[in-house]
Amino acid sequence: MATESSEGEEEGKITGWSQHLIVDDDLREMGKKAAWSVSSCKPGNGVFSLRDDNLDSFWQSDGAQPHLVNIQFQKKVKLQLVVLYVDFKLDESYTPSKISIHAGDGFHNLKEIKTVELLKPTGWVYLSLSGNDPRETFVNTFMLQIAVLSNHLNGRDTHVRQIKVYGPRPNPIPHQPFQFTSREFITYSSVR
Image (cartoon, rainbow, N blue to C red):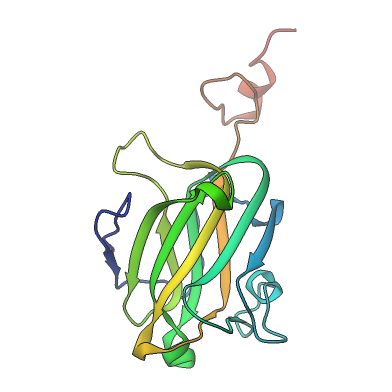
């Protein structure tokens, strides 16, 4: 369905998307723990529109490309998935066609971890942050930056309707290498 690149080596093209947001139960939304900012916006279409859970509202950039969304956390977090809602049918030339994702400790040391190309997307677009190595299932970072490098039909400004950021759900029992699923096992999992 989608081919993606890691470490900026080659670009991936995403041709599949979903009308309904479907995320595994072992992931949790991490965006509420972050400070969000954008490089520019039109009045009334700012960063709040990215997080309001309303698919009719959108962030609209206002200025030169690349258009940036900065997601900063107070402590280092594990991130596994970025999900964007974009709509080519409604937004046409405002729809992103090439997106780059960077991670790091702050603005001073961001490193590109993924670049993808979107082909007329309408719906939720899933961007996995896992690396080529099967053991690299997440990115451990203080900051994530999403850069819209170009739009469809050579559009200047961009529309992004929603962004969700997901990380692995923490183990409910600290220092436990595996998770119990039944209440009885959880009850007797530690010695008092």
